[in-house]
Length: 200
Image 1: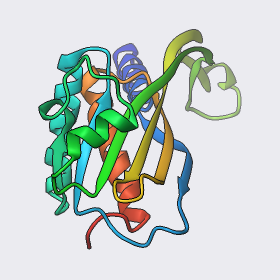
Image 2: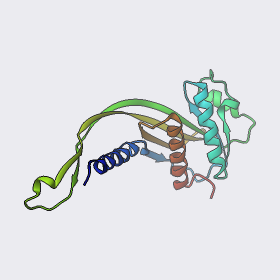
Image 3: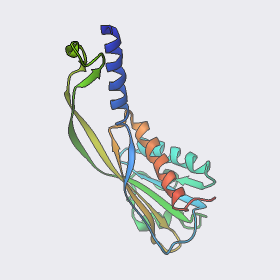
Image 4: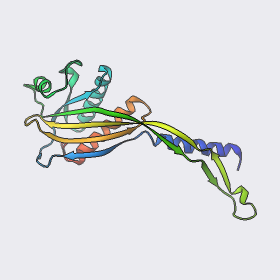
């Protein structure tokens, strides 16, 4: 087995390891046992410090919800970026509008984690007089630091003001900010569908 082939395997394995880190997963989920309806129209709020990030996230969310039969409104069209996100400001924003739920996503925190990736070993050959050729180190071990983002998404019923559903999720070092947004949106819609909170 030549050296170039070993390098190719090492690169492929590294890509799998690093690519697998760009994931978003739920870590806690709750649904009100008293809520029996589903969402038909919703106000989408991204509690982001930068107005650009807020607009991008809300627009992506609105488009994704539309493909599931939900009429969604981005909050930036009704609330300024300087407005405090509170029950009063939200109620003023949706007053007189056909909006039956409010969906809020916010960042709870960012933690830095360090892990050790052991050496990648490749086994080949026979376990006999050629034992010293049966185990080859493809790539050395190394330490890797990455960030874990914790997000919270909550859904409120506008008629009662009560919390209907909530989820905390973790995103492990997304490759790009947009990847984080898209993965969070997909996860939220997946869980809302599983909870029977989306039409159909």
